[in-house]
Image (cartoon, rainbow, N blue to C red; front, side, top):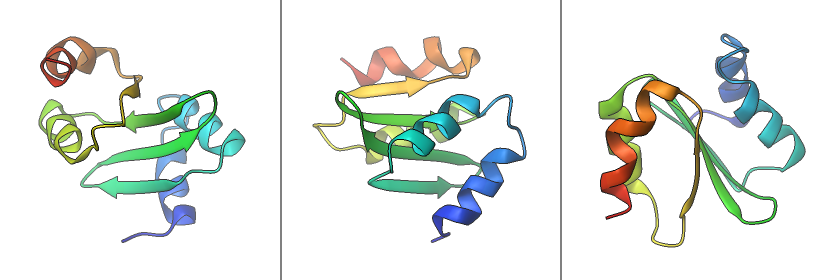
Length: 92
C-alpha cells in the first residue's frame, strides 16, 4: 500500500481535477487514504464522516463502492461524468 505522501503526489499530478479531495485531506486528516488502481479515495470527518473519491473510470468507481462500509454514506465524487452512472444503484 502506498503512503499518504505518495498518494498526495499522485493527486497533485492533476491538481485542477483533484483540488476538492486535496483541500479536504489538507483540512481534515484522513482516517484512510487509499490508491486503488488509478483512483484514490479518502475518509475523514468534518461535520460527518465523508468519503471523497477521485476516479476517472466507472468500473473503478463501482469497485470502490463495493468496498465501502455500511456507515459510509456521505460521498463526494467530483467527476461529473461518473455521478449519474453508478451512484443511484449504490443507494438502492
